[in-house]
Image (tube, rainbow over all chains, first blue to last red; front, side):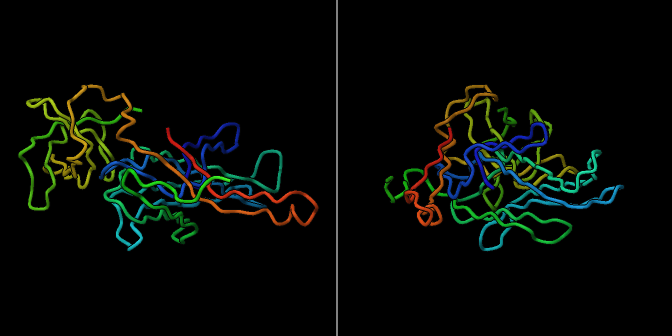
Length: 135
Length: 117
């Protein structure tokens, strides 16, 4: 999920302001100024653990990639207490990541080369406000 | 939040409108896609810029400078300028039908705003 802030503490994913669908900036290029919180789940892991490669790519909806990509290798291991279930929280700070222009964007999360998650959002120019009123 | 600062020459632009700067003139590590503060000490101005390409062989980086964000340089890379950051928001329309079926009131959210800062 795209959120204002994400962090990990005591094995838990902490998120603030999750569910961002659009960002408003006065002009571009501009900072994304947001974070991503991810939660991977695993069950019945082998004792030796499993390595997985994951990547996060920011691209425009038309498929053109923005410069830069986050790549990481993560290892799931069976918890020492023998629990069958395990969650792996991931918090990525993208506040300093750039958006080159207004428009529709996607954040693509891939695991082991397979696209697993797509987070869409729009980048707008300042002054545009949501039209639906509060109830 | 600390943003990397890098010195630029306002007159140094390539055919694509990108501004060339020396990697050695950056205050920190540069990555493609990163937002930095580009400044020119001669005119004492600064602007947001996005790192487009890094050529370690030549020692230069190509920046997409947001010329509209140009203003006087405050020489402070750690300061947050909220007027340049904008807001993050969410649009959501949701109704909790299961709660209505169990006798609870319908919870309806027409618009949910998430603001930063």
